[in-house]
Length: 397
Image (tube, rainbow, N blue to C red):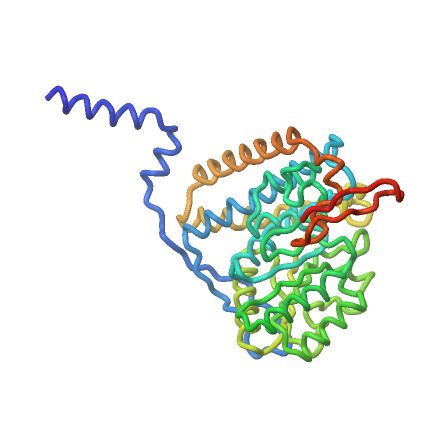
């Protein structure tokens, strides 16, 4: 009897130590999945497009929510570090500031959800979110932004030059990554691999001549390349209507099929990406996707973002189309998650970001003697000339 009472006491004390919210979440019966209607894509040279309904599992929903919150919180932290002058130079965030991704989280997370880890992705300079979804940690990303040895490019790449397995940056020249993406797709086809390359660019870069050259070559050689235009409605401070004679970017490939996607809805992005990837894998050649999205803030840290658009416009998009809120409402209303559970994720994400920021500010900078390292991936050491002929650096792969 005494042993039984002791056992009961241990169980009760274990429950008492858990936060009340965790006990509540653990005791609730959630649905395993739910079916949602999603916006129909506009099509170009396609008889049918992605489905207009999709199934979201509870497991995937929680994963997407955590990833999107991580991207947003990471970008907000980068914004803060930049204003504290801990991050220097150019910094493009996903929400616009620092060239950040705020409000564009559904794009990077949804695209990753629609492809395989063995597929490839290359983008422009608003790259932090894609670096995370491709598998790097927040710690490595923030440390790269602050120029520390623990960064994903050893502190020498910064905001625009981040790399991971099957992720090729982060490219600073407007539009120049698009021919490179076509080249990666050519390598996939040449090597006989069932892989595709997602090649991203913005509406501002969409008028670059090299993009149309890449379209032509990809179509001629039937390359497994998904050209993706992230249309956030403003190229720097110029609206798309003032910059482009045709704002139907998904039709810009002319002879290449295209689809226009709601880039604020992660499920729309996921299903469209799955459709596009299947199209490319079937050997039909390239396809073009236009993701209609928006950025909260300015193009970069020097752009307040309100001189060429009204605050009312920004607030309307924020209140009606926030991709994280859209996913949250779907999950809560369909009993895939509770508000309390999602709040717990928010707390965990904030802690992860704070810990990463601590590392990114405490980690040492790379020493000067390593300036010439990693020029080539597998070469014997050699000398590199410095700023003048008397300064020499050793290069080690």
